[in-house]
Length: 269
Image (tube, rainbow, N blue to C red; front, side, top):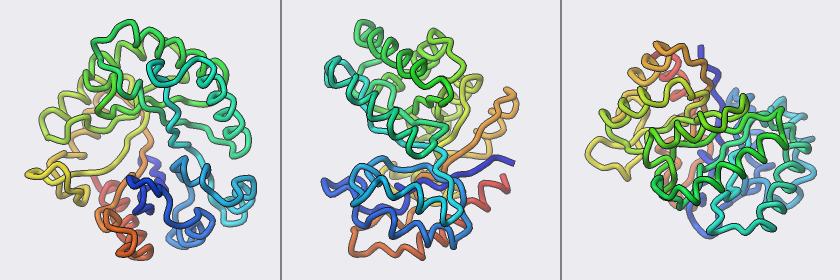
């Protein structure tokens, strides 16, 4: 059975707005615990915008919750982040790992970097190597998210293969939310995949989030292909459809109930 984390972004209706966070994380953690979740992937703005980030580890502990994975927005693109800023960000990332005990970090593989831009990719690769060696006990998972090097699935594979570091791997989500491209992608990337971001989109409308079993992407086939390659993966439930709504329409209990059902669906695949 695949270990499944709950992503705190799934319970944040302001996620894509300038506001980013509608309620402090400390306020929603008790409801997460009551719903039965224990392992979490944490949306970084839930920490950076918290009224008291330093107090949060005690809150996690008191509720029996484990912040396993940090969904980081650190930008390793040298066209956006100069070397001095990268070093400051790396120090902040290390401090956050020490504070919360994160064992995994999600990163975008060069957001805004074209998969054909070899000079920029070389710097991205060097920066990823520096991070991985700085925190050798932490697994760095490069998300196959569009708008990055991951737009070419084979180029992301080559990046990970060339790094050849035991703590760098791929976090799989479909770069294109269509059935056949997703299957081709997982076939290409399977040996390097260690984690999944679970979400689905309507087959006739890629902007509309739907339940895992209802969308155009077949997670059952994806998991089967990963197992066929011997991949050992964990997963995060990243979004639930009921939480894709304006802040004023968000219902925390409803979204948590939907998340619980989605975990059952995935485990039955």
